[in-house]
Image (cartoon, rainbow, N blue to C red):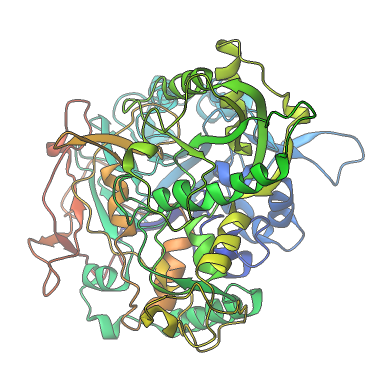
Length: 634
């Protein structure tokens, strides 16, 4: 018999590796931390499936996947069965699970978008899985079932690692509706595209995506017996905002288990080498900075980090026997490789891995390409992007690396000379897209199997920091000198006191504007966009991403906790439901919400009830408040 106690489920939607040193491929240090989170349900994202070594670490006996057991739901992800005598594929996790709560049962499914050949596993197409006997039998096993009250579940929860408005969400929703009718709650927890959004699909169904990089804890509540009862809130993932949401003082927020976990994380950072000092940053460089702003991290990368590599290639080239120099070197990539700010003061390995969480090899993909063809390739790579400016270009330079170049060199035509001849380089993850563009333009490309890997992107950053921002061995006091830190002997030491909270730069406080959907396609929504302001062209990240980079270097005593929250998991959602087998009402009162944040005007919580839906049924606005959640559901 159902009780009056509501059900609260804690779920995570994948992309939990990459983000800090601890989450780098392969994530040897991550499992011991993340397994301590009391998830009821987890699913897998694309980040966990692109590196064979990382997947092997997650699958090793006694590892994270073993720890999760039947809580890991992967309805369309299959892997080789290493325990079988013959070659066969099996589900990575469970195909489905039924959660039995106080108020009823929840059928849980977990789908990854139709990932391509970049996966090191078998990702079955969603549309194919919906025809498989195991799936259809969930709804058709008993011919005696005539109403939802007779089914083994009362609600369907779909963990969908895909965009909140993905076509596959529509397909899943339509198919499930055909089986269960119009009045059973079907709740989608979506992800992958790095936005905050809540999209109502019908009176009893919605799609909810809670940010990125765990800058957000999503909270969703509904009464399955009441139409349009879904309420979604986005809570900023920092200690102060979470304490306010729980209705407690910040200094009373910590628990014994939380403090122990924070200590464990700090000891893991020390042991892993994450706190090794690399250099001294001469300022703050913002990952969401426009390319015409001098504190843009992407501008620093294109202007100074990459040219240092290209110049080395130029130094190697010499001359041909007939006396002519070989072509100049140029680098082209999508503007998506930096993810978090670098802050002034000591720079550790963890800081670099946080700014550049997903590494890539630099490869040579073409040579003897005229400048006008290079510009055509860039234009072709921009096709299909609303901003038409999501590609960055860097060239070798004879100017000092510290020289700030005019913004025009970072925008078309990037200083490229139409009739000059170039050797073309890119990142390994951009090779396929670039080769496709070159094929369409009949530009000869080096085959993927023969592309030459020369150096990794992250190693370029490390070399740059060591060379240009050399550590002084004295907590970066050299930053106070007139000549800065460039003349120092290059120290590389483990930081035990120079940066007492290494990695604390990953603590994020979201000050962003109203969340809204910026890309309704199923592609990764992380390409920066272009804005025209005052006649100048700007390269900017989406509004939803702005807030995640607003954190202060100062931690206010909470850095260890916030490092964990911000960097380990891509998206976590509290899923609160009040299930009833009979159509009764009265207990499903939404949380009381305050109109202001007491003593904290700079923290925002974005709330989007169904009434605030936009043109596509997607929340386009809404007020900011902090939910005072009842102790009975927290």
